[in-house]
Length: 509
Image 1 (cartoon, rainbow, N blue to C red):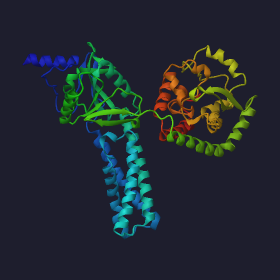
Image 2 (image 1 turned 90 degrees about the vertical axis):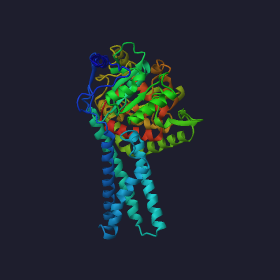
Image 3 (image 1 turned 180 degrees about the vertical axis):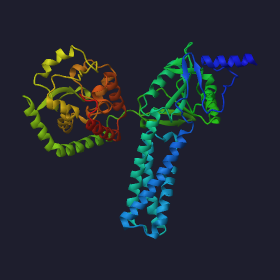
Image 4 (image 1 turned 120 degrees about the vertical axis):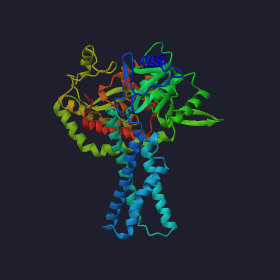
């Protein structure tokens, strides 16, 4: 008996779970702690097993309150008071709203606190509530004030969207302190598990608490990408029991296919543990992925990136409309900026430069001049001194060529506003990859050449994710993600985020 206990303790110490043994729990604590050769998996993160329940409770109560506030406000705005005849309707509205969100799976665990689906459900629930109110009024000849209904629905939708944004900020702050993360065990080969771990850590939501890795091919390694190795793939259920994991993430492993995965899913189902499977496809947005069932086999279908068709027409119309509106609105300010540039230093108001656009076509890009006239002649001497943050693009935090007005224009990216002319001419888009110089394109790796498959943009993911502080690899990675996954909705999101980044003056020099 003592020998068995010693063997179990030794197995825990080296991070391997012996077949036929059960992990020990010391005391009534909900947490388990173990160490292995310098790596200590200590749940000081205090990640509660039921964090989705805490989020869901706040969400349901918040939706009820939003609907109650919206219905009360609508009655006061419409009628100037809350009449007795409408009190019942006011109290029924929160129940109807929560039920609509529930029926559309708005409180489902996998959609909580991440992705756009949580927001889409609110919009669909608003449409459902509006339709049900209209049908009920017609079918039962109820005298529902149309003005009241058309006030309630937009109000409750708007308040619920704000609620979800606030809850995500709360969740993000909690996760930044190590709370409300899913305790996760990664399964696969050492290589595939390592790649998955790196991608999960890049997630902005940071929702995974990686507590163990069951891998093959580690060869005496006690950790993969800093995550403790807690066994081999066959030890998954033991690792889950030992670490109180709430999620198992399987990355490509030849020994976990077909029947083996089904059996693993059944075992995890008994433990109320979720199972997710990574297909090994990274940098692909959710809308491009779908499940296609054929003869009992689930196939992952990857949609081709959009390069033509009606969506490209919509993008072009959106570019033209917004470019015209922004130009007309900003024209008085642009005239003042032009005067300031002219008075600050000698030289032309606008600076133009040859850039490489879609399909490798050369075009002239326009900007407000922010440097001295002979800036290009001085570039070589400065470039020889080294690039501060980027190995391909010359970036200097203190560039002596920049004028006083130019430094201010660059901080808020106002110098790039004349590129609206390029947008109107069809050479650029409002959102897209950064347009490169010919000398830069000559040094592009094959994967970076994909940036030339779409029109370059005035702004893009690189603009809202760090601007000039990004290194070359980060810039290319963001641009390639956009090229493969763009949508008109994403374009609008980037434009909104660009406004916030520009107003804050973050990352520009």
